[in-house]
Image (cartoon, rainbow, N blue to C red; front, side, top):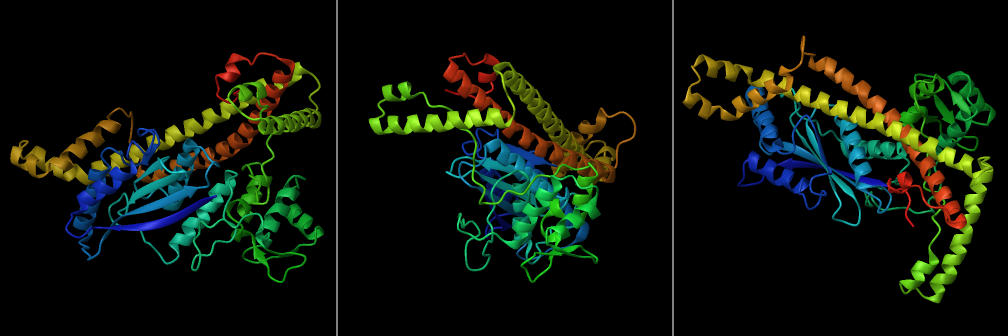
Length: 464
């Protein structure tokens, strides 16, 4: 469950824009809150110099457009908080980057700082109000906070995280968790029905619609496809169910060009198999008789679950189990490598776009400085722009051939981002499957007193 908030940042009374940028960015990237900076990532800027970069974009915008307004908004902060114990800091940072990329569409430089100093992991995403071409500013339209929340929910569902079922934007806090008693909504029912029908592998979108009708749902054609539940009065448009359930997305899934991540309702309880407890070690630590009785029952349940898992997956021998584990580990590592490669390329594209944009914005000043015979007084007056120009030129000096255009880089960024999303969805599925296998094998090893293979123990997936 992730909750979000969009906050506009103005210039504080008695301060200038640069000091406001500096104070807010420094708070976000505070090493004591971000695991010594390990949980800080960025797009089209460097966290260490973002203050100067954001201020340069703002000044360029003012110079090019001449738009000076009282109460100017210089930046925005997106806060994204996660349910305690549901996500790792690394995954939270990845999801924060995905939220910023999809919300801002690559038009604004931003920093994603994941804080772990509270009971709940949360992201501080700060983006410059001025876009990368320095000709426009972010339009904080009426309802943008709701749009952000809906996008965050969609991303969370894609990554199998819980979401708030029916947030009350006006008279209740969005982060109020409704719990297990909240009713299942019609849209949730439709998502679950579509998930179930997709498992039958229908031959195209029209075949999927026929299966829906056979299940008692009425389908209405129009500009957008709408569906009415058997006991409902209102039609529900597919494009209101989230990106994963739009007509376009479903057609891509059925044609094999997209991976579908099934919807998980808040009612689905976690049924993962647990590790057997070393009762003797716990008793030596001072645990009482009550804990011992509970641990024995717990171990019996986990062992029964492990045996049921082997039976349901048709695993008959220990060697077969070991082979399945090895296969799952290799598949998981390969998918993770795909995700990391995509993330690396996204970072490269962001840096190159930033360098080209900054180069174009500062080339006239640099040319004037060169024409002046590298005047010291001219340099002192335009030092910041000259430094940015030199740094930008270094980024693409090593590129052979013609430089790509910003438009081409933006198109590639969208393609790589889509590839990363597909790979990450597969990776999440693969990781859960691998962890189940690792846990089952560890439980069997414990019962049969087999040693845990070092290469598995070193992964940090198993502990006794």
